[in-house]
Amino acid sequence: MSKTLKKRAVCLNLIKSLTKMKGFFTITDIIKETNSPRSTIQDWINRLVNEGYIDRIEDAAGSRPAKFNYILKSEYPTTACKNIFTCLDRKNNLVEIYHFCGSEGCTTYCAFAHRQTGGVIIETKHDGVFLRELARIGRQPLEGLGSKSAVGIEEISIEGDEIVQIIKATGGPAYSLTETMGGAMGVRRIEHTKKETFIEGKIYTPTLEHITLGIDDTDDLEEGATWAISLSLLNNLKNINRIAHKIVFLNPNIQFKTLGNNASFIEFAIKETDFDRVIGEIQDFLRYKTVSEETAIAVMRGLVVPHQLKQFANKARAKEVSITEAERVANELNIDLIEITGERGKVGALASIAFLREDAACLLNPDIKIEVNSS
Image (cartoon, rainbow, N blue to C red; front, side, top):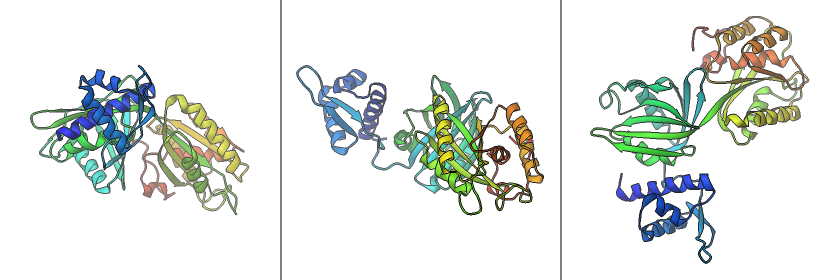
């Protein structure tokens, strides 16, 4: 990393941090943190104001210094890393990392490279410019860094309200640590250290909670398609991190269906403290949008699909399942099964979320069963 870009990164990381903590910062704040001359800091602030990265929100008056704040943009003129966020499942000692990139080539490479070196990653999936990786909390030494692959995630830990990834990289991938990951939305800060043969980076992101929300029976023969309403719901929710929208084919031969008997589920990440607010907004939205009197939702928190839920979904693909059985399974698994306008949608909503970690072939073929022993 050039000295100029390094100074820029340090300055911007401080600015981001101070703005998040106080809502503003002053030149004196930066001087205290860096022990740099006032003239140097003043020069950087002027440059960043001119470039549109920070804004002067209050002019100096007498002994009161001018106040500035950080404008949410990438720290670098261009960055491959667009958004990185992370979800924690304490019960199962798991973290999932979500990375929206500016390049499909980069996500393909990272998925391949992280599998090659192992580390704490146990499952990697990428779809276009979106990469998601399931990982164990803890440390697992990388295998073949520099020979098998140039980058890997060796450790994940929890520090307060933050998830910390320790990534090691050599060659080209080291650039992502020093130049682009720190500029991604969602990253609070990044610390990197140059070792003899590699760069070690620590990436800090807020701890979020993963929600899988199943939705069924919002339609009639003329309007209200469940896939469309669930996608609209995902796009209209506020202050969430959107992850995915999926369609699931269930049993096409049951009595109560519109046409093909499809349900949908959506995935998103939220602050744990926002759960009640978001679920309330979801219920209000669906009551307004549904055209069915049998709409219901299922809400699963965490990253692991219970075996009992997979068994229920397989049964729902094979035969008609009662609402009573759906309620019993949901209650035993601590899954919220919520009536919006009626109860019949509970079966499909609950069954759909069992397909959280299944591929497209399984989602769209009602003859395929979920492997119950899969994680």
